[in-house]
Structures are given as structure tokens and as C-alpha cells.
Length: 138
Image (tube, rainbow, N blue to C red; front, side):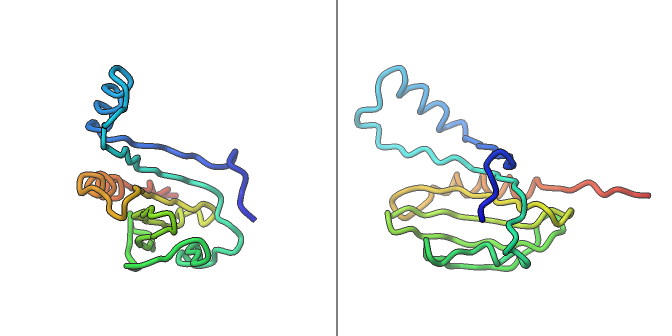
């Protein structure tokens, strides 16, 4: 069962080029723009009950997963992977369990057309590299 969205914190990060593009499109109209806006999404939600290990979040029923890599992010066990969906949509993903063991953190960027712009991947990697968890000392 998927947790209700009310229990989810979702942060969208848009790069400055996309912000400028959207401002221009609002002012002049999007006709012939030829630019896809790709937001980096950071989602923190309660860990689904079926997720015992981080790779349990992968769902091959809705997409094809590839380039699966075990990793560490902010000192926690994590995975990174690429998802390809039937509608020619692709996402780059990273996921880890929060140190409290009760929350799942999923970071992604997606785009249509089968490829993601290098600058979007750069922003995704900056977000991943910036994660840190404070440790409580007793």
C-alpha cells in the first residue's frame, strides 16, 4: 500500500536556465520553444512496509530498470538506477533509507525523449552530494 501524500515531503529544484525559459514562455508564449523543463525531485516519505532493503523499491512492472548500482549516500546504503518508461520517458534516480529506518528518500530527474540533459544530471549529482544527516550524540 502506498503511503498517503500528506505524509510525503516533496521538494522540486529547477535550474536557473529553466526558470529563465519559463519566464520567457510566459511573456511571449511557448510556441516553437523546443525546450523541456526537468525538475530535480527530492521526496521523503514513510518507508513502505514491503521495503526491507533499499533495492525493494524497484518496480519492474511499470518500467525497465537499468544501470542499477549499489552505493552510499551521506554514509547510508543507497542505490542509483535509470528507469525507462513505455511512453519514451526516462528518469535518473537515487534512493536511500533515512537513518531513522522509517523514511525513504528518493531523488530523481526525468525527461521525455530518452535522454536527460547533462546539466540536469549535474544538478542531480549536486543534490546527492549535498545530503548529510546530523548524528545525535548522547
